Length: 94
Image (cartoon, rainbow, N blue to C red; front, side, top):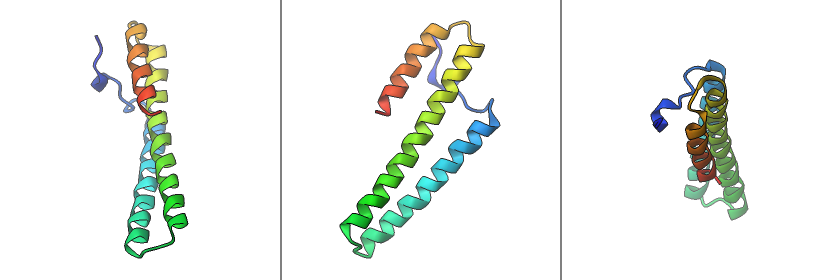
């Protein structure tokens, strides 16, 4: 059985760049949420920022799973086992 560690995005530098960019964006947005809470900003503004953070992290997760799925379907003879594992990872994001 293939381990989760075997599913890597290292083979696709462009995918890795996109994921890192999304996570950096989420990091900055989360910092803005913390600052907004500390500054007692309006709850509407805080919720909007939290929504942006959540979407950025979700999209990064979906990119990771999509990259692993693409790799699984093109490179691996044991694709069935990996697809099952990827399905579990994908559903964990829902």
